[in-house]
Image 1: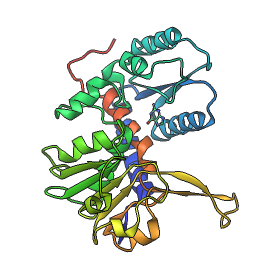
Image 2: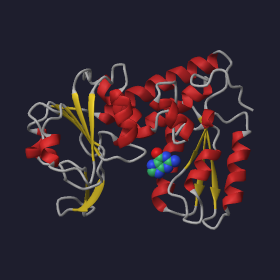
Image 3: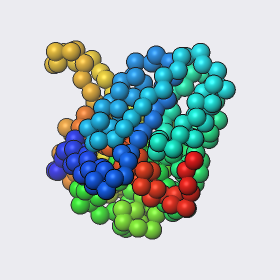
Length: 298
Ligand code: GUN
């Protein structure tokens, strides 16, 4: 069994990005700039946005955060999005989710200019990904593709089973794994809460991508000998073995599944560290206008 070390791969990619930023600034070009809008006081969202700013700093990007109160109106939030859309200095914009209930997520995401949508959540980017045009791919699927590629795993002709059909992981992952290039060219099955006889489907997977949001859901009897197992889940559970009284686990029962897998991502240290790196890769592409070369940003 080979461990897919997301922490190590993320560090390598950060090094590559930092070198590219140096190359750009040596040529007199500006540093990539990521802006984040954060609404309210949700501690997890604050932690995420702080981690994103820290990652930007590490690779030499500029970053800015726009913090708005929980009771901000949808109109004011949309005006902030528009302000950033029109700021020439800013290459990428993310609006940290979840948003308060009085705000329509879709309306806000659709207000972001697709060429600045480095989260890859705008329907234009989702659609472009689906039809194979250059696009921003959202963080988790993009990170998983990099893990697969950089671990030398071939996907062409393989059976890929995806557990979970969310808009930000399961669905884009299915599109990417079935596209006509490597990584891709896989025969893809998406499973969800209504799938019958799940075990008979998962046990045929050469590549099993698990994003179901249930701690320890995938057990060894559901996995084929020699499968590649990618665990997207992350859950904090009580533990009497750690000082903090908690530990992190994924959607996969790691020890028993690792004994059968050819490759597996640990939790923590697998998919998680790749997500912020994906956002950095997208922001770098935005600053270089790689995805939308014909569009001159305002
Ligand atoms: N909340 C949890 N994950 C994400 C993410 O990838 N992007 C944004 N904008 N919000 C999130």
